[in-house]
Image (cartoon, rainbow, N blue to C red):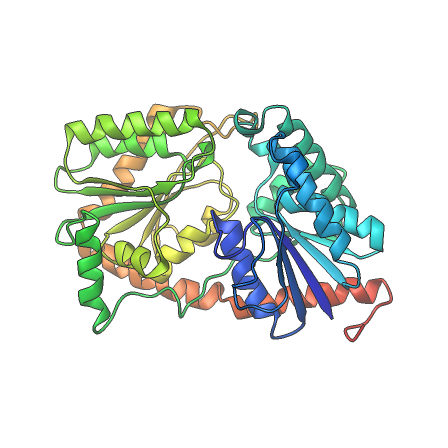
Length: 411
């Protein structure tokens, strides 16, 4: 079976959870099938992985609206997937390629839902009129796909609510996964290296710390976290691994809030560059609790990564987060009542901020309990979120689609 994965992100250019997902998924699928990857950001000739093709934006579209530039890349992908048994696209950036390829070559199109355009209206700040185009692309692809993979049950519900013309029978839940060998707490000689890494980043490993990892975008809820940090004990550090802002506006909002917080308390650390995995693991291992204050989160691979390193997670009770965090066992869920207009804005922002601070303090005041939750978190990802199991479930879905169309595994 030949599977062509279509994605915006692929190493070394990964900006978020979808890129991590495709990188890991492609690895486990190669154990079962001929896998080709088509991605953005130019050629990958020096990557050392067979079957990876990177595309650049056509020169004629280099100054166009980002959505049109995306479509230019997608058309190149669609042209080059002839001969595949399945095309599998990830995010709206590649959905257009999958949709066109399916019509052009008669190939079943599977898509993975990592987020939904109707639930991210703030993207209009980034794309302007292109947001209407990206929304049309996503809607067309979802309504025409042979199958849709939702990364959580919460995401499945969002899909059926956002796109009522989609047949519920073709929406399947397959959770995101975690590389258990690549994400674990430092041991042996690595402990000293990890200590040196975090101190060089301005982190004191002897102090309790709350850590956030994610892009600077409306959905991640950073402004609420920065407000909640005002209510944390004076000895607690806030470590913010955050970059790649969606827009200048959200970048300025977060920067101003951070600067104000840093004037009023010490131990506030902002790491803007994307850290190599071993450095990020060192930062996580030096922290007490991981925080995910998102107002929209289909699942949250960052939560799995933190749990794999042995951290409890305090996360908003929204989207797929309750399917990851076992409330009271591997961390705590923060209640959030949200506006139902697609923005996810808390109905009472002050209450959400207060509840977030109170829940973080609940973990911070009991370090022994926090450590126990961290151990339980590691066990939970081992039991439920291994990539090997996710690869097998994905292959079973591919086989089902081909069987339904009269194909075979050996085609």
